[in-house]
Image 1 (cartoon, one colour):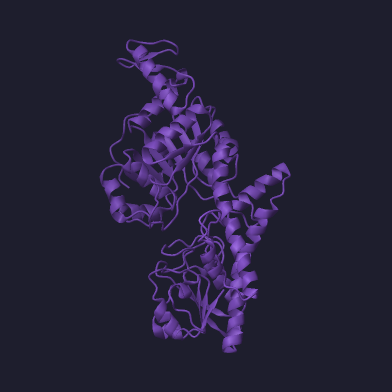
Image 2 (image 1 turned 30 degrees about the vertical axis):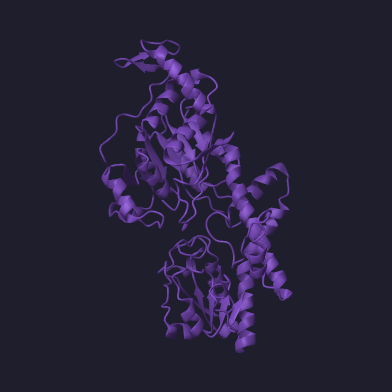
Length: 499
C-alpha cells in the first residue's frame, strides 16, 4: 500500500529534555520557561494518576506529548476481527496508523479499499486511507517508526488444549528487532495472567532496553462483538493496565483519545484476568443452560419456555441460551488458558473444565437428536440420509466461522455415514481452518424450495435473520432446530424438533 507522507522523526531524546532551539538539558536542570511548565505537569500528573510529577519527564514525557497532540504514530499488528476495527477507531481519533499483517491477500483488499471485516465498511476504510491516516504493510521494519504498537494476534489452543502463544511470541520478537526508546507496546490478545509481563516484556527487555525507563508495556483486552449493532470499538468501555504508573498513564492517554470510556486497573495481570473472567462467566452459564436443556427435555419441559419466563424476574437473573455448541475465538478457548495457568499454583478448576466438557459435547448431542428424529419420524438411518446444515457462522448475521460448531456438526454427520451440505448467506465458501482442513472449499448450496425438499432433514445451527424460515417450514421434511427460531416466529409444527 502506498504510504502517506512520513511523520517527523519519532525517536525519543534519551534522558534529557529538549528546550528552546533544540538544546538538550541534563536531568534535573530547567531552562527558561520550564518552571511554569513544571506546575502544569503537576496538574496533568494528578489527572493521569502519577503521584510524582518528576515522573512526567524524559522519555515518558516526550511520548505523552506525542499522544496528547496526536503526533504519535500507532502500529496495529494483526488486521483481523480485532485489529482492523481498532485501527479504524484509532485513525478516526486523529492518529496516523500503520497496520501490519503477514497475509498478502489482506494487503490486496486494503489497497483496493475493500474491507473483509463486517464491522468496517468499505466507505469507512476508504475515508481513513484517503485522509492519510491509515496505511497497511507486510514489512515489519515499519515498526521502528511507530510510537505505540498494539499486538492483535491469535491466541489459539494446541491440539492438547494448551495455550498456544507462538503468535504472541513471534510478534514480540519482531517488535524487539525494531524496538527503540520512547515506544509503548500493548498486548490486546486474550491470554492468561502474566503473559504481558513474563513473556512480552521479557522478550523486549532482551534488547537491553528497560521497561518503564526506555519503553513502556501495557495490556488492554479486546472486547469486540461481531455483528453487534449497538456497541463498537469506540463505544465499548476499555480496560487498560500498564507496567508501572508511567505505562498506565500512557495507556489512559492513548486509549482515552480513541474510545469513550477507559477503565484503568492496577496491573497487566489484573487486566488479563478481567477478559478471562468475562468469557468464563459466559462459558459456564451457557454450559448450565445446555445441561438444563437435556434434563428438562427428559422431563418433557421446554427449556426455552423456562428461560423466557425466568427472565421476567427483574433482579438476580440473567438469561443465557442453549445451542449446538460454542463458537467464536473467545468463549470456546479462553477458559482453557486459565485452567492451564492454574496448574502452576496446584489449584483445580473443576467447575470451569466441566463447563468446557458440556459445551464441547453439544455438537455430538445435537447429531444424536438428529439421528433419533430421522429414525422415529422418517424410519431412516442417519447413515442413509442427506442433511442440510443451515448456518455456518458461529452467530447470526455475521460471516465469522471461527470455532463454529457447524463445522463439527458437518464432520460428525459424515463420520456417522450421512451426507451433509450447508447454506449460509454470509459464507459462500469454507476457507482454510486449522482444525477442519477437509472442509476447505465446500460451497454454500442454494436454499430454494426444491433444494430444501431434497434433504431428509434441515438442521438449524445459526438463525440468520435473512433466511426465509416460513419457506423452509413448508419445504423441509424434517427440521432440527437448535435455536428455537421456528417457535419464536410462530412456525412450530409437528416436523420441527428442538435439539
